[in-house]
Image (cartoon, rainbow, N blue to C red; front, top):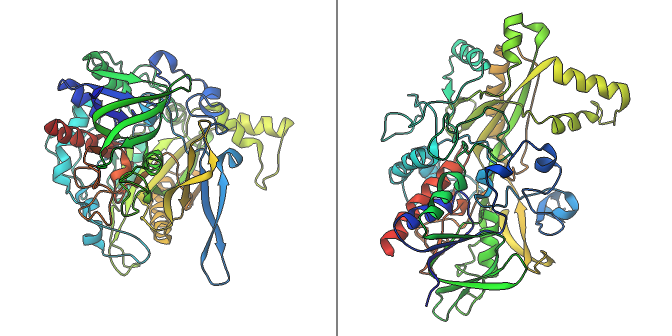
Length: 563
């Protein structure tokens, strides 16, 4: 006899909609989360806890990854790869291990994918060296679920008609935009002069209290920090708390699932996990859902060997872990010195707390004569530098020649940075093309604290990603120049942002080239679903979270009909 109708591994944006939907429908649900169960009372603006200590993420001594990065070419012109454990490099690929997952610590910039993102190969053709495909579903299938996220998770904003605006089933967002920073007005003016269309950025942040969740307190501490008011639309605050309140959902924190066990027919029968006391436990269920972040989802499936799955669960055609995605792009900064501004402008630029909430999508599809054909472009989002003083001050200990400075020179540099200017930033998001050199495997020589093989992640990128990223960065800088910013700088690289990861278990119609079918059900394990960002065959040119939420609600409806 099964313990639960549904067992979910993970509790973030890909898991919480499933737990919420099925618990509300009366089915018994258990959520196994490797991390602790924090609440609003546990979140405060502790820079040390966030950024210098392992409070919200695992210690790399206990849980690490092995990263294979580009290391030049051999004499035959073939790429070489150097592997290094993150316990040695300090390069963490964890984004928040707790109930609600990394959605607790997101900035909350929410963009939908657009219809063109579902037809990347059809619209733009093949790219040599990239495994570009069309999705097995189209935008209209996901649109109702984007709208559901707006209502249930809480997305604030204002829908604006523009060239690349995606179709909506509702006229506007259910919540008005959060309070905007005075710089937003100057940004709008600059864009108007440049003939760019300034867009309000939707945020998964409530502008006022709704139910048991408070409204935004405008501290500015969103990215990398938990929300002490519950305004941020984390999976925990928005969905899991309500799922638990039904009496049909049980959350077990500190539950590290190390294997999904399957029977002779290939069906998953139970989840094996270590509890808080490091004792082995097991749970049986009718349906299993894996949503523990793209890298860890692939790792768990590869580790779940069975009689019908000798190479790992759902891995009959060796597709698990393949075509891992990050987000390509770059970033840049301009500085506004208060002495360059009028007294009124200086006072406005000194304001901290409210959001810029501005972005550009004028080049979501690039049609420029410098390129032979149209290209998929991306999104540019503008924001203030993070208010965390510890991180800002720490970055100032080096001079322009990478020499360490201290004493009076360091004091003057820090004083100037905090009192003389405001930094205005942008981030560029464009497609990270799937390739054969970006994937997840197991490294049997490196183990976590429970003795399980860790994930080995190769992080190869496609040169095309940099071409698009550089094009968008040049466009982004023109706004800063028009606003008369000083010391404008930017960078584009193939280094993967660890907080923006998807793919590894792509969905599709052909079992030989995909792990999941269009319902996100494993091709060769009938009662197994994957509902985090792993399903994405291509990533689009926006942050992934809204799409992960939306698809998880879609998968939840599919499972509900099945049960």
